[in-house]
Length: 347
Image (cartoon, rainbow, N blue to C red; front, top):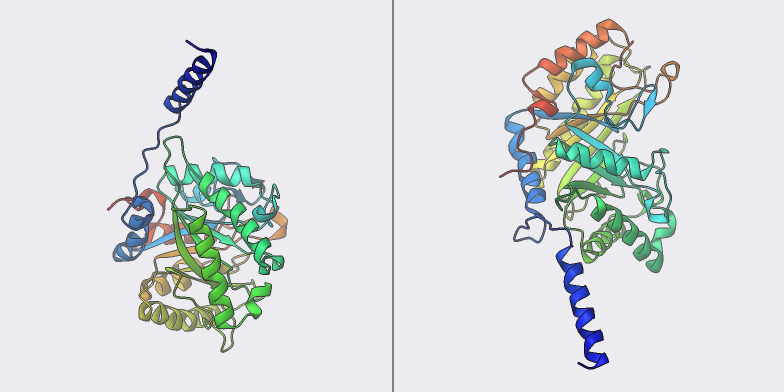
């Protein structure tokens, strides 16, 4: 046998060996091209409203009062021996290669937390507050590529990709894209969505998120490219319970009607920072979520030290009356925490 043939044969054998060692993926794909679990999740967001409201918290399993990046902890779990059923994370910073997001949480820790949360059947939401320099074409493509790479890395040992609701450019009233008109915002949203699909991201449900502002601009930028709507309304501890209740009912009356008209499931991020009222969860919030058909409700995040007061759910050491009230909220048949969230990714 000639030396050339020996080299070619050796190369073929090595190539076959490498192929045989490649990790097998058990992922399945729907007709749409997305993973079947992603499609099932989107369907169940509407179907599960017959059972109740999925309850969770921003960063609820990765950060809390006096701790951070401990995957075995949750302030909610410490109170009621159950975990949030939905958790959200911010991706801002991943596009420029940073190790931490804008809230100083490491992306490696977020990835580990997300995969573990998915294994327990929880709903994962992510926001990408893209930077202003993303409005240049070449920069946008490179930054979206980094987002896509990270989203595709959210995969377990069996090759199952974590389904994620991704809120592209959440309307927060501060970011540069909030100043765009409807056509400009919609076009940019679609461009980012198309780029992510071009980069082979197949586990995303497209979300639109907006923080409520008391003006005529509410929901004016909404794009039909989005499949899920998230509304943010949080307040500080100076708000009166009656005012909070009145404001939230007014917001949801419009937002839920809007979502129904556009045939989209809708979720809410809310709460009063510092929880100044002992009966807030059972007497203020619970009647409202029973009145409106929401897919999920997330509380604002808990972070920092005890003395700082940055919390939207109780934690160990908080006022016993507030803890007791939260447990009443937890035990109500209309609230779905993680132990009751079964089959989110199944048909």
